[in-house]
Image 1 (cartoon, rainbow, N blue to C red):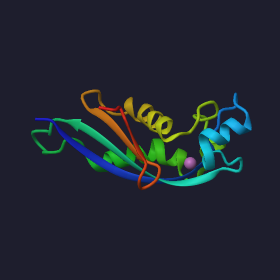
Image 2 (tube, protein in one colour):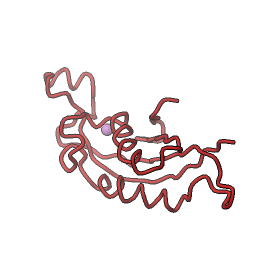
Image 3 (tube, rainbow, N blue to C red):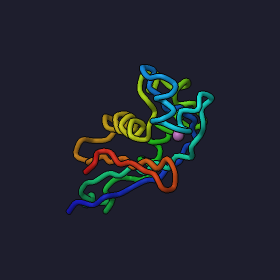
Image 4 (cartoon, rainbow, N blue to C red):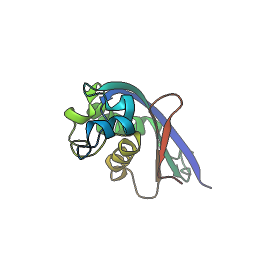
Length: 136
Ligand code: NI
């Protein structure tokens, strides 16, 4: 009996999307406002989901306070109120799209959660735009 449990967290961060191998014109064409050289911010909503069997003794799949602590320690502290391009090491050479941020978050958490749990990341960059990793 597998059940998905989720914890929602939040961070604010700035970024700029661009490909250094492209001209200004091509970057503007592809990334539009997100290529603003002086960066811009988003209010990211992060939903971390674990899939597993409920424990016989507790009825919990995972202690969500413990999951919240893990996310805060290893993700939120590094990203909140930061410039993702300049203040973190992860995006020095990786475009900080919602897709890439979701994969980075998955990698930050995967080794810290026991392997019997499936880990899924859902990241909202705006109320209407969100990504999921892995895709299924
Ligand atoms: Ni943006």
